[in-house]
Image 1: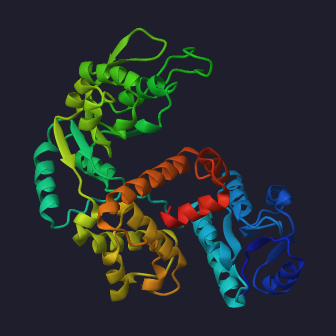
Image 2: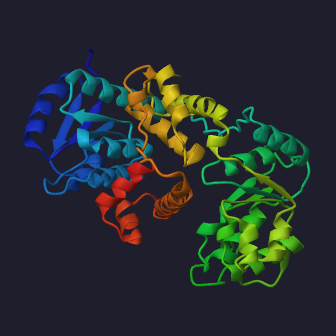
Image 3: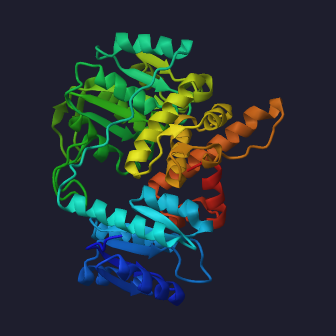
Length: 450
């Protein structure tokens, strides 16, 4: 192999590994530096200016979680986003390495390594960085997941409804289990509307804290509160002329629903700290996985708000009820992630397809997407095999207990996913917020393919 011009920085606390790489890597790369601790990593990057960092995931023999590697990966990407990172990991930490790739690592190498694979991976990382740096590759923004309709009677009926209502300004309420693609359907309605050339602003309404609710939705003026250093347009204003998508609307506290109702009803908002009413022209789409009618009966959701957002109601069926979409969706995700992670995998084997069809998919499309993403990252062949597809093993349950068990698991999964989103994937903070140990959290993440 011809010697590359690349500069490689190796971070590994094992002196034996550093000695072996000190002999191997200079044969293939122009400059190589090796350091034993990540504590000097950022300063060495600033001085040495490497093209690629080969980063170990664990640096203490008594702490073997891999979180150190993820932390330092985040630090590198935050401070030096153009530097490619290849993770160096033990076999037991492969799942964490997969998470690392989702956070921006170029690839990972499993110890003990094969010299040829290590050099090939580092070279590919250098080549990718060189192309990006010289602008030989143009950055193309990732397009939204397209709507796949399938041929089930339920989806055919929904498609006809969407064809009729999309060109109008009718308010739409989309319901369905977590992961069924409610946000994708909302995007499809916007795309087919007369507002398609205007913005679609998406808000996770359930994630808005009470203190930020009005500021985020309606905006604020400078000096309205301590951190209000400038005027800020809220989501309603940002969506003016386009579509406002309020996801998880069933999670909005009852006492804040009146403020939302007023804005929807009057189509005007008033910024926090101001008295001037600002008119807004929006098309409203809402989504929830909750039973709003039951919440209305229980006094947990305002009846007047429910009728205001429920002009048109679409209920998306679970993926298990539209099984004809499983393989087309899997193939779409396969193509997407093969391109993102530069994997030479393009097809699903017949056995892999059969395995996907047999699974219940309690997490719906989101679970399928996550499953294929992991399989692509771990793949070593041009065809995904059944062993590449990691699915949770569910213990058999009695028919009368199935609904209760599924509901409990769905609540647990939803709670964990919400915590992961809230804390940006910081596992320590997630575990602390859920009052569970990190090993228990890892087990839950694996169980729900998060």
